[in-house]
Length: 96
Image 1 (cartoon, rainbow, N blue to C red):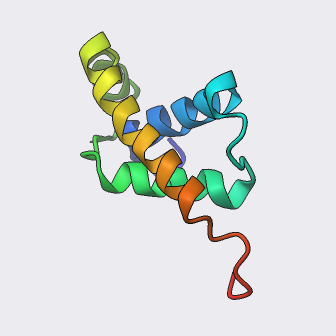
Image 2 (image 1 turned 120 degrees about the horizontal axis):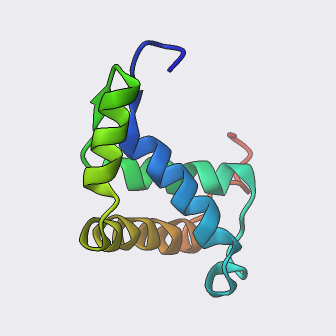
């Protein structure tokens, strides 16, 4: 926690996006850095943040979020974001 705080949801979403994008189900989707970042940002905008300031707090929140029910809920938002970015990729824009 370099900043003195961290968003545990951001850590989880970032990891889950990398795992999902490596799976056979999503290998046809673009996995460039721009698309991955867009997927992460869209997902995080649709999920609550969970900021903590200590390692103990991080462990506690991670344990609360790392349940089958919560992972299913988080994955649904990520999958929606993957499909949205796949349908409307922004990496071809000359404004980037």
